[in-house]
Amino acid sequence: MRIVLALIAILYSAATFAQDKPPPTVGGKPLVQVKSRTPSEKPGKQQPVAVRLQACLDIDDQTKERLNCYDAVRRRPPRRASWIASSTRRKTSG
Image (tube, rainbow, N blue to C red; front, top):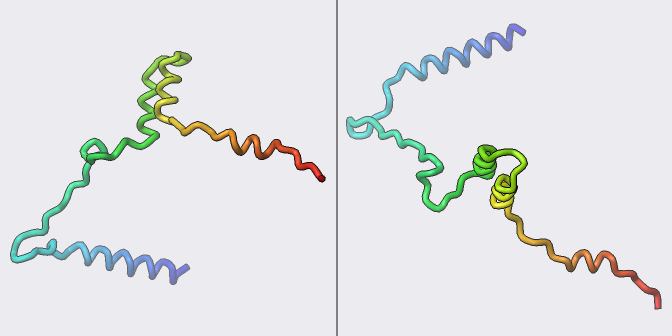
């Protein structure tokens, strides 16, 4: 237990000393901090599925419009019927 406490104290003090230094500079000028872009600012990127589904929650419950909204968000390609036909074929011994 003492070893764990000593290790925590050493790591905590090292983190404290690391923060005392001034920020790094290049040619006497401070480094530029880049801001992250919001999803709406990124060109060509769609919003995550969860955000689009939450937008459907604004529509009244048990309405066709809400179902259409969910269907538009979770659009899936139609299933191919070939796997159904191949799994139902009977193998005949001949």
